[in-house]
Image (cartoon, rainbow, N blue to C red; front, top):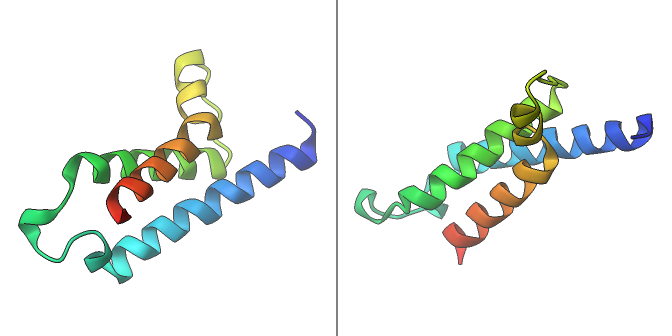
Length: 89
């Protein structure tokens, strides 16, 4: 992968993960108005994607091929998108 593409993918990962973090911390009522209404399964999906995006964005590359795939944008971005979509709509 060319260096520019790698840089752009890592930048997108960091920005997306930071946006999820800020959204959840600053405005948690976007997720649920009552504690009983929290969609825990989709929130876990969103948080797993956010965590994988942070790992990818900061440049950590595991030696284990399974973890290398797990901490890639191929997993992180769809998890964040799916979690966000299911929580907000």
